[in-house]
Image (cartoon, rainbow, N blue to C red; front, side, top):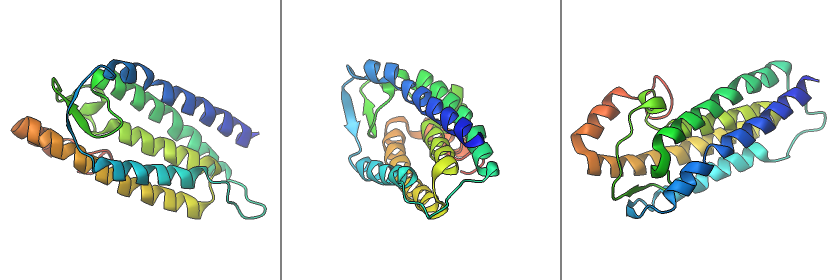
Length: 186
């Protein structure tokens, strides 16, 4: 019964998490990209590989997740969804799939951006872990997390080069006081 509850919650979390990006994507559609960081595409590829590991149906015979793992999954999912919604509401039309700045880009430091510079990546990590804890065999979970973290580091680095170039000292002050995407780690 716990497995079914964890899967139902996880499915709902993924639906709600995805819906957080509908409005910002529509609003960003009309924005011209002034500056892009093509290197972020490598990060996107590695993040996708991380999620592929998590969603793979490779399991040993008799595989079952422990109740503790399922409960941990159920605890991680909802705050990850809430974080994505908070982040996209503040980022709004500036949201991009790849690292890019629009001509009228603003440095967002409010809402979830007060706690971490990249709350969407934090929410993605939360969803990756929630999914992995609910359904993934541990070697694939470890591989997925590693690919995700490497890809996210590439993306964060690419985005932050753009922000540092555009916002200079303002961004450097923000960066010095706010963790990238893992709270308490700068």
